[in-house]
Length: 69
Image (cartoon, rainbow, N blue to C red; front, top):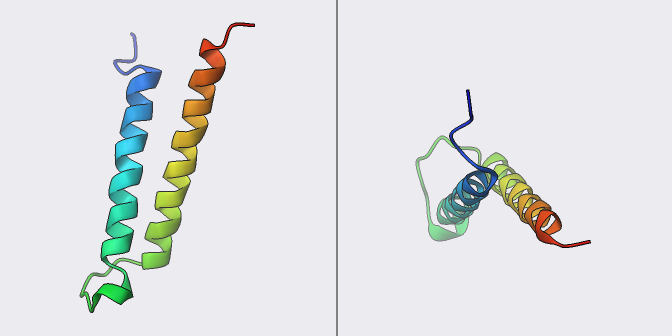
């Protein structure tokens, strides 16, 4: 059985997820007014940054795999 997603698909998914998480963490920031969300803002931001770092690492892996040696 073959996994239906390629490494490029997973990288694209990571990029979209990190952008959504970062935008959400900024929109529910206390500087934009009161929100009644039950989401821990620090945990959301750290998760968004973690997914962003994983995305950057996956891009570096793709560059490494494409580089001729």
